[in-house]
Length: 76
Image 1: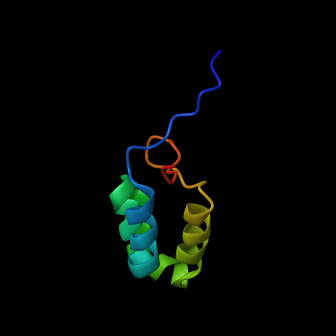
Image 2 (image 1 turned 45 degrees about the vertical axis):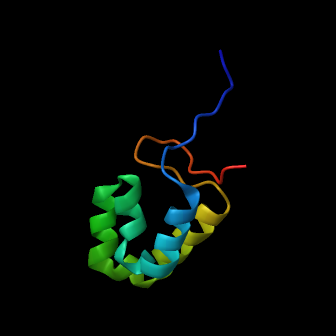
């Protein structure tokens, strides 16, 4: 069995910028294809900012995943 990890086609920098600027509206979640949680973030204003802050930290650490479960990673 292969231990190769696949990464998302979505780019790290736009995801991080969208979360930083519009995280309370869930725009970064729409960008990566997670429309359901994007709508929830939009309705709750990012969990009153807490959910958006957590997402920002997770994106910055390289652990954020797209709708297919692939990690969004900064390109080397």
